[in-house]
Image 1 (cartoon, rainbow, N blue to C red):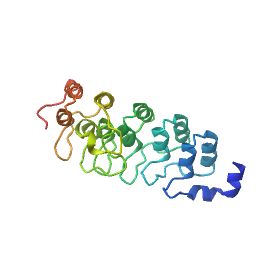
Image 2: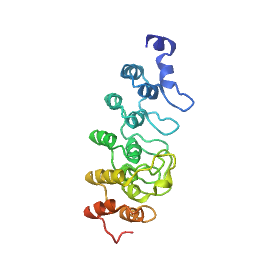
Image 3: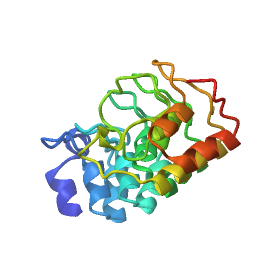
Image 4: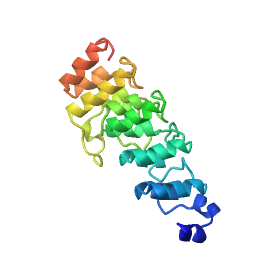
Length: 218
């Protein structure tokens, strides 16, 4: 690290981006090197800069389940609600991936479960749509994570692994436990219940009904 410090003064470390717009903070996280991460942060490397996929260092750490790195980023003051160009926060991204442990980490640090992205989606909408939507592009509808979890077809994002009903049920359940609005509707006027019925996810339908979903809401 002495060599790194000599070759790259603090100002250069802070400004560095590779062709994918990843910062040295991203690289330290990806290397799973806590000593290096601490060094670059002490040198003024950015906490919240996003790469060209819209992922911040925190999002990168949580996707990789590098929780010690995430803890360090939080200690240094990263914004757990920092949004990318599509206004998607780490909560949006991890909810979409169905990463329950990472979502729990975010909830434990006060992340905004009602944050809305550029198309009005909350983390609940996307969390409920486990692995069903691209997480770095603006949504085409005004869904919330809960709606998307039940509503979006698994074929919507072929570059993601498709979620199954069991995973989707767990994600929807987590969102409901933390106060997701069960009868929220998207810009098309569709509720999470409508999506679950359309996808023939009986267990999700039952869970939504048990939490007060109104069958009269489309």
